[in-house]
Length: 275
View 1: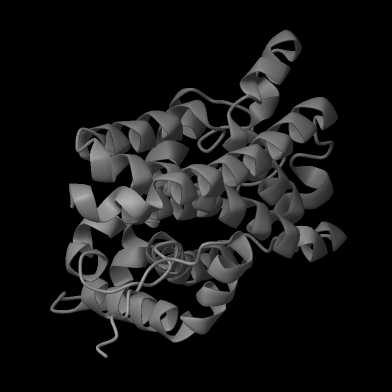
View 2: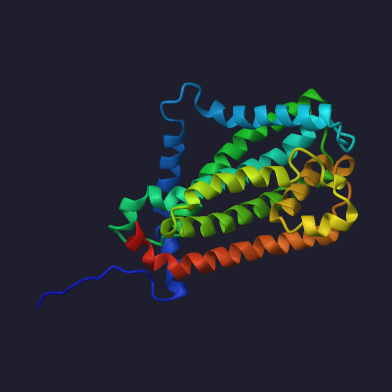
């Protein structure tokens, strides 16, 4: 008697998460492959991860610090900008990579079974490499200006986690939507560009009037960036986090993540039909 083997996604959530662990080597392979591709045949290699945020920091320092003369919270303006540029750059790169990840791996999706969640999350890991490299610029700026962080720097891993969760949540939404609605390939760059200017990257969120700060915190990255900046600048920068806005932003980050996982799992089985 002939036997037919059907390969399909785990029928239960428990089986699905077990499959994620079982396919962890594929996760490592996809992440490492994307890292190699990103810098392959480039003249200056990984320096691209340093040049872009550094030039953006210079432009923001000139526009907001020199021309607009916005307050620097008692720290050198380049450090103020770059301490926010790091989490934003990681978030933006993750969105760009995750949103196109399923389309770029169409051959895998249509041929073999594995938890599709692996693909967009591996794109986030690639962005984390750029994040780590760009961190060297911040260390250089702190050494140049003789700036020594306070005890708040110990909370930095928590804020990095918040940024990772926000990146994964938004990335899962955009990755899933981009499979069915290809218009999102044009929308994502606009979201990233627009988000850069409405997030407190080139300026301190303290310039936002108190009556608007809670509304401003509806942008989930506001709380993540302010927390990241507070951890680095300590008592001289964002000396007091705006607690209501911070709580709102963090709640929205985790809602974004939970809803992203839910929607991705909901439409995951149909990806091969649209690729």
